[in-house]
Length: 233
Image (cartoon, rainbow, N blue to C red):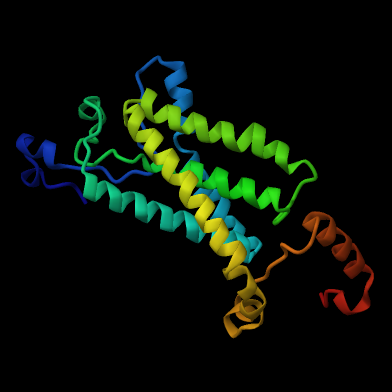
């Protein structure tokens, strides 16, 4: 099917909007900008590559409520934007982003919520996958959060105040949501596991297991030797 040229006129060009997943702009030839443009997409990678694959292959309740918290934080951030209605910096004209508001930064909110919640999970030894997981928190998670915040200013999408507002909001919401899950919701995990939907979807909580990788490894080896676990094919 060929597009109907009568549908589009030059005067309509400023009314058109693109629906893209990775539409992040940087100055041509700017290597740092190119790097930071990819850093700016870390929230997309975490959401699609992290939480979706985590649900498909792990079905962990801790991970599911982690993702729910991020969605709530993004909803709160977007709601604040609609109330405050603070404009983005003047560079929004080049970036074609002037039709959206900038305070607080949703990217900064997302990454600092993620870093805060992940840090608390590791500190309280919940969902521990690696013996040195706190090293990953210090040398990977938090640097990525700070770089994402910096990238939004460097690339011209936000002002310094907007990214710090987003980071502060993410820190606060990450801590509050962790407290809600850890102190309130977690006591319901056994009931969720035993519910009909839990059994149907194989939902589980392994946060009480000190080293989940070692536990699964040893059980997989033990099951291989047990006749009742042999595949029929």
